[in-house]
Length: 431
Image (cartoon, rainbow, N blue to C red; front, side):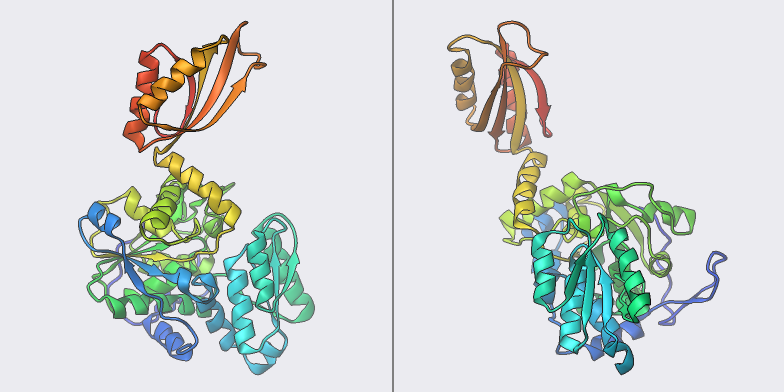
């Protein structure tokens, strides 16, 4: 865990006087978040807290989810967008708003603009999930598909703003957006005053900035940690360097938090208020998606489950009671199918391996008898006879097998090896 110790309770807004900031940076504080909550009262849903028994058993204390997948638009993003657009002047709102996003921010801006009577244009990468594109259009926004990345979409959105006068709504690096996202922190304190730790997924840092700004000035005893995907973790090196650091490259299944550089403003908030940032692997996230689906009947997107994944990855790393913000549930059904398979593999319940056989009758049947005796379920079998790595008269057979978990998978492979079968490759935790 990297980052500064929690700040002492003090004024709601604090000025940063670091040498790398050209002007005094005035931070959003508890009062600003409370004002945002008052402005948006009756518009937002107060999302529920839901207990998760398997996580509670793992950490040795109460564990709750803050269910933002039930928010309007399917994620927390509408909070910041509503606050930002609501605070525009009538003249600014008349010019319309523009945003760039791969999905959730797009839907949040489109929904907020619809509620507040503003025209919205949203630039999305050409490969954005179709359900997210359709949902954004369904809220009344004009969608423009450009480039391959969110950065390409951001460039196009800023150019559009300069050309048309539309107000650019940043996905995270603006005080009003931070204040809007921070209303989640106020709700957690009101719903569960006993909370000792809050876990928040981090991409650019708007959600963590807002939640920490809402909580820490009035409850310095509550720890607030950010959670990033290890494949796109810009905050740990940035906090270590004392300034935002850009990643050369990044990749993760959690596309909603795949941001290559912290925002300038959000970085100052995270450094000042948060207790640290931890990272989780894509395998951790996949296992968590599976747990949420099976045990809590919750459909989450990978980015939305990152905060929850930290509890599975570090069950003894956080003081309970813990509330993990489940920040979104907008997932493409096709991706969900892939994620379930990936999660089963990560959990040791879906095993893939290749066995080399003499290509003669009866050999495969004998091996299948062993698999059946071990009570494993074969899902797929694929013969390969033309692989150049095979010897003459040899066949490679790829198996996909459902098991009861890592121990069962390891026992199955050990039994096959002890029977003399050559297992050349395995994928999954059992080797």
